[in-house]
Length: 216
Image (cartoon, rainbow, N blue to C red):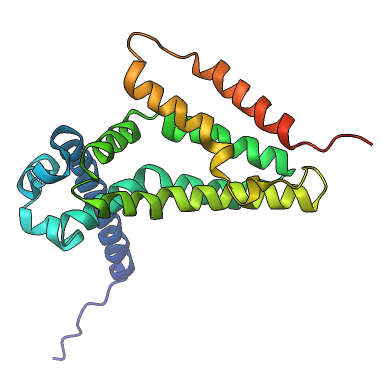
């Protein structure tokens, strides 16, 4: 008698479950890595502790991230970068609406985000010894953010919503009040807190009044 082998359709389902499991495990490792970086800084962070906090073997961590630099980069991307990309691709409307959205997201995802502040605090403390960390943050967060602001300014000028200004060459000027707010939060939030909602509105008002074209 010929025995027919069982053929099932579980292959794709297994593949999907495998991807989901892998994604969840990576999220667990990234969450643990952030906790370790925030607690100890980059130099003192140990892969053993990341693995322990994530509940995986040390070798499993290396399957996802071959070294601490790659892990730090992934932590930064998970905190901020995706939000910037999604905002620029997904926000319709005028250039002013886009720019307001970018500023709003800066406050929501950077200024108010205690995890991002912990990363920035670590960068200030350790980037002198590990300049590659500042390079990672610059590449993954600053450049995409500034490019998004520059694009909004160019679009506004082309549509004659905004005046043509040197801010296109130096979009840092548009973001500068938000950077000041983040530094303020790092240094003074306990004793001299800012009303961040009112401050953000003042930031937007200042920027828009500087950019809007005056009526002839």
